[in-house]
Amino acid sequence: MQTGESDSAAPHHLDMSKIGNMVDKYIMVINRDSVVEYCNPSVREELGDVIGMPCHEVLCHSSHQLDDCPLKEVLESGSVSSRREKINGREIFFSLHPFSSDKNGISQVILIGTDITEMVNVMKKVRESGEMWESLFNSMSDPITIHAPDYTILDANIPALNLLGMKKEDVVGKKCYDLFHNKDSPIVRCPMKRTLLKGDMEKSLVGPPDLNGDYLVNTTPVFDKNGRITRIIHSLKDVTELKDMQRKLARDNERLTMFSDLIVHDISNYHQGIFLSLEMLLSDESLSPKQRKLLEMIETQIQSAQRLLENAKKLSRLYEEKAELEALDAGTVLIRVISQLKRTYADRDIRINTEVKMGTHTVLADELLFDLFINIIGNSIKYTPSDPAVVNVTAEVCDEDPSFYRFEIIDYAGGIPDEYKESIFSRFERRDRSVSGSGLGLTLVKKIVENYGGRIWVEDFTEEGKVKGSVFVVLLKRA
View (cartoon, rainbow, N blue to C red):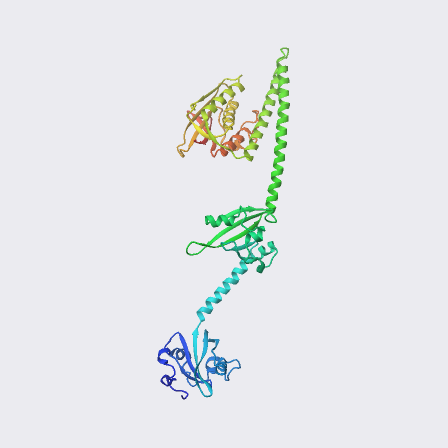
Protein backbone atom coordinates (compact mmCIF):
# COMPACT_ATOMS: atom_id res chain seq x y z
CA MET A 1 0.00 0.00 0.00
CA GLN A 2 1.36 3.43 -0.97
CA THR A 3 1.27 6.54 1.17
CA GLY A 4 -1.67 8.79 0.40
CA GLU A 5 -4.06 6.10 -0.85
CA SER A 6 -7.79 6.48 -0.14
CA ASP A 7 -9.97 4.56 2.32
CA SER A 8 -10.69 1.96 -0.33
CA ALA A 9 -7.04 0.99 -0.32
CA ALA A 10 -7.14 -0.01 3.33
CA PRO A 11 -5.65 -3.43 4.19
CA HIS A 12 -7.94 -6.26 3.11
CA HIS A 13 -7.18 -8.18 6.30
CA LEU A 14 -9.99 -6.29 8.07
CA ASP A 15 -13.27 -5.00 6.68
CA MET A 16 -12.83 -1.29 7.29
CA SER A 17 -16.34 -0.54 6.06
CA LYS A 18 -17.66 -2.14 9.24
CA ILE A 19 -15.50 -0.32 11.74
CA GLY A 20 -14.41 2.79 9.92
CA ASN A 21 -17.64 4.62 10.61
CA MET A 22 -17.55 4.15 14.40
CA VAL A 23 -18.05 7.88 15.05
CA ASP A 24 -17.16 7.66 18.72
CA LYS A 25 -13.81 6.05 17.93
CA TYR A 26 -10.67 7.32 16.27
CA ILE A 27 -9.22 4.53 14.04
CA MET A 28 -5.93 4.52 12.15
CA VAL A 29 -3.77 1.83 10.57
CA ILE A 30 -0.04 2.50 10.92
CA ASN A 31 2.80 0.57 9.25
CA ARG A 32 6.17 -0.40 10.72
CA ASP A 33 7.64 2.84 9.32
CA SER A 34 5.23 4.81 11.54
CA VAL A 35 3.27 6.05 8.53
CA VAL A 36 -0.54 6.31 8.71
CA GLU A 37 -2.04 4.10 5.97
CA TYR A 38 -5.71 4.49 6.92
CA CYS A 39 -7.90 6.74 9.05
CA ASN A 40 -11.66 6.75 9.61
CA PRO A 41 -13.99 9.79 9.23
CA SER A 42 -13.74 10.69 12.92
CA VAL A 43 -9.98 11.16 12.58
CA ARG A 44 -10.43 13.20 9.42
CA GLU A 45 -12.99 15.48 11.09
CA GLU A 46 -10.70 16.04 14.05
CA LEU A 47 -7.21 16.08 12.44
CA GLY A 48 -7.77 16.29 8.69
CA ASP A 49 -6.47 13.83 6.10
CA VAL A 50 -3.45 12.37 7.89
CA ILE A 51 -2.84 9.41 5.54
CA GLY A 52 0.83 9.31 4.57
CA MET A 53 1.93 11.31 7.64
CA PRO A 54 4.15 9.89 10.39
CA CYS A 55 2.01 9.04 13.39
CA HIS A 56 4.39 10.85 15.78
CA GLU A 57 3.69 14.09 13.93
CA VAL A 58 -0.07 13.46 13.98
CA LEU A 59 -0.41 12.37 17.59
CA CYS A 60 2.67 13.63 19.44
CA HIS A 61 3.47 16.75 17.41
CA SER A 62 7.06 15.56 17.20
CA SER A 63 9.39 15.40 14.19
CA HIS A 64 10.81 12.07 15.30
CA GLN A 65 9.64 8.92 16.98
CA LEU A 66 9.68 9.18 20.79
CA ASP A 67 11.74 6.80 22.89
CA ASP A 68 8.67 5.56 24.75
CA CYS A 69 6.56 5.26 21.60
CA PRO A 70 3.88 2.57 22.14
CA LEU A 71 4.03 1.72 18.39
CA LYS A 72 7.62 0.64 18.81
CA GLU A 73 6.57 -1.53 21.77
CA VAL A 74 3.84 -3.26 19.75
CA LEU A 75 6.13 -3.86 16.76
CA GLU A 76 8.82 -5.35 18.97
CA SER A 77 6.70 -7.40 21.38
CA GLY A 78 3.64 -8.19 19.31
CA SER A 79 1.45 -7.31 22.31
CA VAL A 80 -1.12 -4.59 22.84
CA SER A 81 0.06 -1.21 24.15
CA SER A 82 -1.76 1.98 25.15
CA ARG A 83 -1.31 5.59 26.16
CA ARG A 84 -3.30 8.75 26.78
CA GLU A 85 -2.88 11.92 24.72
CA LYS A 86 -4.44 15.36 24.77
CA ILE A 87 -5.69 16.31 21.29
CA ASN A 88 -7.38 19.64 20.60
CA GLY A 89 -8.10 20.03 24.31
CA ARG A 90 -9.66 16.60 24.67
CA GLU A 91 -8.41 13.55 26.49
CA ILE A 92 -8.05 10.57 24.14
CA PHE A 93 -7.17 7.05 25.22
CA PHE A 94 -5.31 5.13 22.48
CA SER A 95 -4.84 1.38 22.32
CA LEU A 96 -2.53 -0.15 19.69
CA HIS A 97 -3.09 -3.71 18.47
CA PRO A 98 -1.02 -5.87 16.07
CA PHE A 99 -2.92 -5.86 12.75
CA SER A 100 -0.90 -7.77 10.10
CA SER A 101 2.47 -9.42 9.77
CA ASP A 102 4.94 -10.74 7.23
CA LYS A 103 8.19 -12.65 7.34
CA ASN A 104 9.85 -9.65 8.97
CA GLY A 105 7.36 -9.52 11.83
CA ILE A 106 4.49 -7.14 12.58
CA SER A 107 3.88 -5.03 9.50
CA GLN A 108 0.81 -3.01 10.53
CA VAL A 109 -0.73 -1.80 13.76
CA ILE A 110 -4.32 -0.64 14.22
CA LEU A 111 -4.80 2.29 16.58
CA ILE A 112 -8.18 2.76 18.25
CA GLY A 113 -8.75 6.03 20.15
CA THR A 114 -11.59 6.74 22.62
CA ASP A 115 -12.60 10.21 23.83
CA ILE A 116 -12.47 9.99 27.62
CA THR A 117 -12.69 13.77 28.28
CA GLU A 118 -16.07 13.57 30.03
CA MET A 119 -14.99 10.63 32.13
CA VAL A 120 -11.74 12.41 33.10
CA ASN A 121 -13.71 15.52 34.09
CA VAL A 122 -16.13 13.46 36.17
CA MET A 123 -13.25 11.68 37.88
CA LYS A 124 -11.60 15.02 38.53
CA LYS A 125 -14.77 16.37 40.15
CA VAL A 126 -15.13 13.21 42.19
CA ARG A 127 -11.52 13.51 43.32
CA GLU A 128 -11.95 17.20 44.14
CA SER A 129 -15.18 16.45 46.01
CA GLY A 130 -13.42 13.70 47.91
CA GLU A 131 -10.57 16.05 48.80
CA MET A 132 -13.06 18.72 49.90
CA TRP A 133 -15.00 16.17 51.95
CA GLU A 134 -11.78 14.92 53.55
CA SER A 135 -10.77 18.49 54.38
CA LEU A 136 -14.17 19.32 55.90
CA PHE A 137 -14.31 15.97 57.68
CA ASN A 138 -10.97 16.57 59.37
CA SER A 139 -11.58 20.26 60.10
CA MET A 140 -14.57 19.48 62.33
CA SER A 141 -13.65 19.91 65.97
CA ASP A 142 -15.88 17.07 67.21
CA PRO A 143 -14.75 13.44 66.88
CA ILE A 144 -16.73 11.87 64.01
CA THR A 145 -16.70 8.31 62.73
CA ILE A 146 -18.72 6.68 59.96
CA HIS A 147 -20.06 3.21 60.64
CA ALA A 148 -21.59 0.41 58.62
CA PRO A 149 -24.87 -1.10 59.94
CA ASP A 150 -22.84 -3.98 61.43
CA TYR A 151 -20.97 -1.47 63.67
CA THR A 152 -17.79 -1.60 61.55
CA ILE A 153 -15.95 1.74 61.40
CA LEU A 154 -15.53 2.85 57.78
CA ASP A 155 -13.82 6.21 58.36
CA ALA A 156 -12.70 8.49 61.19
CA ASN A 157 -11.67 12.13 61.26
CA ILE A 158 -8.54 13.46 62.96
CA PRO A 159 -10.27 14.47 66.26
CA ALA A 160 -11.68 10.92 66.52
CA LEU A 161 -8.25 9.41 65.90
CA ASN A 162 -6.76 11.75 68.53
CA LEU A 163 -9.45 10.71 71.03
CA LEU A 164 -8.66 7.04 70.43
CA GLY A 165 -4.91 7.66 70.23
CA MET A 166 -4.69 5.53 67.08
CA LYS A 167 -3.92 5.76 63.36
CA LYS A 168 -6.65 5.50 60.74
CA GLU A 169 -5.45 2.14 59.49
CA ASP A 170 -5.78 0.78 63.04
CA VAL A 171 -9.35 2.10 63.37
CA VAL A 172 -10.99 1.41 60.01
CA GLY A 173 -12.47 -2.09 59.90
CA LYS A 174 -12.80 -2.43 63.69
CA LYS A 175 -16.08 -2.61 65.59
CA CYS A 176 -17.02 0.66 67.30
CA TYR A 177 -18.03 -1.03 70.57
CA ASP A 178 -14.59 -2.64 70.72
CA LEU A 179 -12.63 0.58 70.16
CA PHE A 180 -14.79 2.99 72.18
CA HIS A 181 -15.98 0.75 75.00
CA ASN A 182 -13.66 -2.26 74.96
CA LYS A 183 -16.71 -4.56 74.65
CA ASP A 184 -17.45 -7.52 72.41
CA SER A 185 -21.01 -6.28 71.70
CA PRO A 186 -22.91 -2.94 71.71
CA ILE A 187 -23.43 -1.35 75.14
CA VAL A 188 -26.96 -1.29 76.62
CA ARG A 189 -27.60 2.41 75.97
CA CYS A 190 -25.94 2.44 72.54
CA PRO A 191 -27.60 5.20 70.45
CA MET A 192 -26.52 3.51 67.20
CA LYS A 193 -28.54 0.43 68.17
CA ARG A 194 -31.62 2.64 68.62
CA THR A 195 -30.96 4.39 65.30
CA LEU A 196 -30.88 1.04 63.51
CA LEU A 197 -34.16 0.04 65.18
CA LYS A 198 -36.04 3.33 64.72
CA GLY A 199 -34.36 4.69 61.58
CA ASP A 200 -33.94 8.12 63.16
CA MET A 201 -31.26 10.26 64.79
CA GLU A 202 -30.57 9.36 68.41
CA LYS A 203 -28.77 11.11 71.24
CA SER A 204 -27.23 9.65 74.36
CA LEU A 205 -24.98 10.90 77.14
CA VAL A 206 -22.06 8.52 77.65
CA GLY A 207 -19.45 9.00 80.35
CA PRO A 208 -16.95 7.05 82.43
CA PRO A 209 -16.09 4.21 82.45
CA ASP A 210 -17.15 3.77 78.80
CA LEU A 211 -15.31 6.93 77.71
CA ASN A 212 -12.61 9.09 79.23
CA GLY A 213 -14.96 11.96 79.99
CA ASP A 214 -18.58 12.87 79.38
CA TYR A 215 -19.74 12.94 75.75
CA LEU A 216 -23.04 13.65 74.03
CA VAL A 217 -23.26 10.99 71.31
CA ASN A 218 -25.29 11.62 68.13
CA THR A 219 -26.01 8.88 65.60
CA THR A 220 -27.52 9.95 62.26
CA PRO A 221 -28.65 7.39 59.64
CA VAL A 222 -27.82 7.64 55.91
CA PHE A 223 -30.27 5.88 53.56
CA ASP A 224 -30.00 4.49 50.04
CA LYS A 225 -32.69 5.04 47.38
CA ASN A 226 -34.61 2.03 48.71
CA GLY A 227 -34.80 3.46 52.22
CA ARG A 228 -32.24 1.08 53.71
CA ILE A 229 -29.68 2.37 56.19
CA THR A 230 -26.24 2.10 54.60
CA ARG A 231 -24.19 4.28 56.94
CA ILE A 232 -24.35 5.77 60.44
CA ILE A 233 -22.66 9.10 61.15
CA HIS A 234 -21.43 8.89 64.74
CA SER A 235 -20.39 12.19 66.37
CA LEU A 236 -19.20 13.01 69.88
CA LYS A 237 -19.53 16.34 71.71
CA ASP A 238 -17.25 16.71 74.73
CA VAL A 239 -19.48 17.94 77.56
CA THR A 240 -17.15 16.96 80.41
CA GLU A 241 -16.68 20.54 81.61
CA LEU A 242 -20.43 21.22 81.40
CA LYS A 243 -21.27 18.05 83.34
CA ASP A 244 -18.67 18.93 85.98
CA MET A 245 -20.32 22.34 86.37
CA GLN A 246 -23.77 20.72 86.59
CA ARG A 247 -22.56 18.32 89.26
CA LYS A 248 -21.00 21.19 91.21
CA LEU A 249 -24.17 23.27 90.91
CA ALA A 250 -26.25 20.29 92.07
CA ARG A 251 -24.00 19.87 95.12
CA ASP A 252 -24.12 23.60 95.86
CA ASN A 253 -27.89 23.65 95.42
CA GLU A 254 -28.23 20.69 97.76
CA ARG A 255 -26.19 22.52 100.41
CA LEU A 256 -28.22 25.72 99.95
CA THR A 257 -31.48 23.79 100.25
CA MET A 258 -30.24 22.13 103.42
CA PHE A 259 -29.16 25.48 104.93
CA SER A 260 -32.46 27.08 103.86
CA ASP A 261 -34.50 24.29 105.48
CA LEU A 262 -32.45 24.55 108.65
CA ILE A 263 -32.87 28.33 108.82
CA VAL A 264 -36.62 28.21 108.15
CA HIS A 265 -37.04 25.41 110.70
CA ASP A 266 -35.02 27.12 113.42
CA ILE A 267 -36.50 30.59 112.90
CA SER A 268 -40.00 29.09 112.90
CA ASN A 269 -39.20 27.52 116.27
CA TYR A 270 -38.03 30.89 117.58
CA HIS A 271 -41.25 32.47 116.30
CA GLN A 272 -43.33 29.88 118.14
CA GLY A 273 -41.52 30.77 121.34
CA ILE A 274 -42.16 34.46 120.75
CA PHE A 275 -45.86 33.82 120.01
CA LEU A 276 -46.26 31.92 123.26
CA SER A 277 -44.56 34.70 125.20
CA LEU A 278 -46.72 37.34 123.52
CA GLU A 279 -49.91 35.42 124.31
CA MET A 280 -48.89 35.25 127.97
CA LEU A 281 -48.13 38.96 128.03
CA LEU A 282 -51.37 39.89 126.24
CA SER A 283 -53.36 37.85 128.79
CA ASP A 284 -52.16 40.23 131.51
CA GLU A 285 -55.16 42.46 132.31
CA SER A 286 -52.92 45.06 133.95
CA LEU A 287 -51.45 46.15 130.59
CA SER A 288 -52.09 49.74 129.62
CA PRO A 289 -53.73 50.35 126.20
CA LYS A 290 -50.41 51.62 124.85
CA GLN A 291 -48.52 48.51 126.04
CA ARG A 292 -51.18 46.20 124.60
CA LYS A 293 -51.04 48.00 121.22
CA LEU A 294 -47.25 47.69 121.10
CA LEU A 295 -47.40 43.97 121.88
CA GLU A 296 -50.08 43.44 119.20
CA MET A 297 -47.87 45.27 116.71
CA ILE A 298 -45.00 42.94 117.61
CA GLU A 299 -47.28 39.94 117.16
CA THR A 300 -48.37 41.20 113.72
CA GLN A 301 -44.75 41.71 112.64
CA ILE A 302 -43.77 38.22 113.81
CA GLN A 303 -46.73 36.74 111.89
CA SER A 304 -45.59 38.63 108.76
CA ALA A 305 -42.05 37.35 109.21
CA GLN A 306 -43.35 33.79 109.52
CA ARG A 307 -45.43 34.17 106.34
CA LEU A 308 -42.37 35.56 104.55
CA LEU A 309 -40.35 32.48 105.54
CA GLU A 310 -43.12 30.12 104.44
CA ASN A 311 -43.63 31.90 101.09
CA ALA A 312 -39.89 32.03 100.41
CA LYS A 313 -39.59 28.31 101.05
CA LYS A 314 -42.55 27.51 98.80
CA LEU A 315 -41.23 29.80 96.05
CA SER A 316 -37.82 28.13 96.26
CA ARG A 317 -39.39 24.69 95.86
CA LEU A 318 -41.42 25.89 92.87
CA TYR A 319 -38.20 26.77 91.03
CA GLU A 320 -36.51 23.50 92.01
CA GLU A 321 -39.24 20.91 91.54
CA LYS A 322 -41.62 20.13 88.68
CA ALA A 323 -45.27 20.33 89.72
CA GLU A 324 -47.13 17.01 89.87
CA LEU A 325 -50.65 18.05 88.94
CA GLU A 326 -53.89 16.28 89.72
CA ALA A 327 -57.60 17.01 89.46
CA LEU A 328 -58.67 19.27 92.37
CA ASP A 329 -62.05 20.80 93.16
CA ALA A 330 -61.61 24.60 93.28
CA GLY A 331 -64.84 25.02 95.27
CA THR A 332 -63.57 22.82 98.11
CA VAL A 333 -60.26 24.70 98.23
CA LEU A 334 -62.08 28.08 98.36
CA ILE A 335 -64.15 26.93 101.35
CA ARG A 336 -60.89 26.27 103.24
CA VAL A 337 -59.46 29.63 102.11
CA ILE A 338 -62.52 31.58 103.26
CA SER A 339 -62.53 29.78 106.63
CA GLN A 340 -58.85 30.57 107.18
CA LEU A 341 -59.22 34.26 106.22
CA LYS A 342 -62.16 34.73 108.56
CA ARG A 343 -60.00 33.47 111.42
CA THR A 344 -57.07 35.65 110.35
CA TYR A 345 -59.23 38.79 110.08
CA ALA A 346 -61.53 37.97 112.99
CA ASP A 347 -61.45 41.62 114.07
CA ARG A 348 -62.65 42.87 110.68
CA ASP A 349 -65.89 42.75 108.72
CA ILE A 350 -64.91 40.68 105.68
CA ARG A 351 -67.39 39.39 103.14
CA ILE A 352 -66.13 36.84 100.60
CA ASN A 353 -68.80 35.93 98.07
CA THR A 354 -68.19 33.10 95.61
CA GLU A 355 -70.12 31.48 92.77
CA VAL A 356 -67.63 28.61 92.77
CA LYS A 357 -69.45 25.81 94.55
CA MET A 358 -68.20 22.37 95.50
CA GLY A 359 -68.00 19.95 92.58
CA THR A 360 -68.51 22.55 89.83
CA HIS A 361 -64.99 23.54 88.78
CA THR A 362 -62.27 20.87 88.70
CA VAL A 363 -58.80 22.09 87.72
CA LEU A 364 -55.31 20.61 87.24
CA ALA A 365 -53.34 21.77 90.27
CA ASP A 366 -51.62 20.65 93.48
CA GLU A 367 -51.74 21.56 97.17
CA LEU A 368 -50.48 25.10 96.39
CA LEU A 369 -53.87 25.97 94.89
CA PHE A 370 -54.80 26.94 98.46
CA ASP A 371 -51.85 29.38 98.59
CA LEU A 372 -52.83 30.80 95.19
CA PHE A 373 -56.32 31.79 96.32
CA ILE A 374 -55.49 32.81 99.89
CA ASN A 375 -52.73 35.17 98.76
CA ILE A 376 -54.89 36.95 96.15
CA ILE A 377 -58.01 37.19 98.34
CA GLY A 378 -55.98 38.02 101.46
CA ASN A 379 -54.22 40.77 99.49
CA SER A 380 -57.56 42.23 98.43
CA ILE A 381 -58.76 42.30 102.05
CA LYS A 382 -55.49 43.78 103.30
CA TYR A 383 -55.62 46.67 100.81
CA THR A 384 -59.30 47.45 101.31
CA PRO A 385 -59.08 50.63 103.45
CA SER A 386 -62.32 50.26 105.39
CA ASP A 387 -64.91 47.68 106.34
CA PRO A 388 -66.75 45.90 105.06
CA ALA A 389 -63.97 44.36 102.96
CA VAL A 390 -65.88 42.77 100.07
CA VAL A 391 -64.32 40.25 97.68
CA ASN A 392 -66.27 38.43 94.95
CA VAL A 393 -64.99 35.26 93.28
CA THR A 394 -66.42 34.07 89.94
CA ALA A 395 -65.49 31.34 87.47
CA GLU A 396 -66.56 30.36 83.97
CA VAL A 397 -65.24 28.47 80.96
CA CYS A 398 -62.78 30.68 79.08
CA ASP A 399 -64.23 31.97 75.77
CA GLU A 400 -60.81 32.19 74.04
CA ASP A 401 -59.77 28.66 75.06
CA PRO A 402 -62.45 26.32 76.47
CA SER A 403 -59.77 24.05 77.95
CA PHE A 404 -59.32 26.70 80.71
CA TYR A 405 -61.47 28.12 83.49
CA ARG A 406 -61.36 31.90 83.91
CA PHE A 407 -61.40 32.78 87.63
CA GLU A 408 -61.95 36.41 88.64
CA ILE A 409 -61.22 37.76 92.14
CA ILE A 410 -62.85 41.19 92.37
CA ASP A 411 -62.16 43.65 95.18
CA TYR A 412 -63.11 47.22 96.19
CA ALA A 413 -59.60 48.26 97.26
CA GLY A 414 -59.43 51.33 95.01
CA GLY A 415 -57.62 49.81 92.04
CA ILE A 416 -54.00 49.61 90.94
CA PRO A 417 -52.35 52.23 88.69
CA ASP A 418 -51.54 50.92 85.19
CA GLU A 419 -47.78 51.32 85.71
CA TYR A 420 -47.92 48.82 88.60
CA LYS A 421 -50.25 46.22 87.09
CA GLU A 422 -47.31 44.02 86.01
CA SER A 423 -44.70 44.92 88.62
CA ILE A 424 -46.91 43.85 91.55
CA PHE A 425 -46.07 40.26 90.58
CA SER A 426 -42.35 40.96 90.96
CA ARG A 427 -40.41 40.15 94.09
CA PHE A 428 -40.81 42.51 97.04
CA GLU A 429 -43.09 44.84 95.06
CA ARG A 430 -46.15 46.10 96.95
CA ARG A 431 -48.93 48.37 95.72
CA ASP A 432 -48.86 50.40 98.93
CA ARG A 433 -45.73 50.40 101.08
CA SER A 434 -47.68 51.78 104.01
CA VAL A 435 -49.33 48.37 104.26
CA SER A 436 -47.26 45.68 105.95
CA GLY A 437 -46.30 42.54 104.04
CA SER A 438 -43.38 40.60 102.56
CA GLY A 439 -43.99 41.47 98.93
CA LEU A 440 -43.60 37.78 98.03
CA GLY A 441 -47.27 36.78 98.04
CA LEU A 442 -48.14 37.71 94.45
CA THR A 443 -44.72 36.54 93.20
CA LEU A 444 -45.56 33.14 94.68
CA VAL A 445 -49.02 33.27 93.06
CA LYS A 446 -47.59 34.03 89.61
CA LYS A 447 -45.09 31.18 89.84
CA ILE A 448 -47.80 28.74 90.97
CA VAL A 449 -50.03 29.71 88.04
CA GLU A 450 -47.14 29.37 85.56
CA ASN A 451 -46.30 25.92 86.94
CA TYR A 452 -49.92 24.96 86.33
CA GLY A 453 -49.60 26.07 82.70
CA GLY A 454 -51.98 29.00 83.25
CA ARG A 455 -51.90 32.81 83.20
CA ILE A 456 -52.59 35.64 85.62
CA TRP A 457 -53.04 39.37 85.20
CA VAL A 458 -54.91 42.28 86.81
CA GLU A 459 -57.57 44.61 85.36
CA ASP A 460 -59.57 47.55 86.68
CA PHE A 461 -62.97 46.93 88.29
CA THR A 462 -65.34 49.77 87.48
CA GLU A 463 -68.83 50.73 88.61
CA GLU A 464 -70.80 53.67 87.22
CA GLY A 465 -67.78 54.58 85.07
CA LYS A 466 -65.41 54.84 88.03
CA VAL A 467 -62.57 52.53 89.08
CA LYS A 468 -63.63 50.94 92.35
CA GLY A 469 -61.07 48.16 92.66
CA SER A 470 -59.20 45.42 90.83
CA VAL A 471 -60.00 42.19 89.03
CA PHE A 472 -57.34 39.48 89.34
CA VAL A 473 -57.87 37.17 86.35
CA VAL A 474 -56.52 33.62 86.68
CA LEU A 475 -56.68 31.04 83.88
CA LEU A 476 -56.39 27.45 85.10
CA LYS A 477 -56.59 24.26 83.01
CA ARG A 478 -59.76 22.25 83.32
CA ALA A 479 -59.25 18.68 84.52
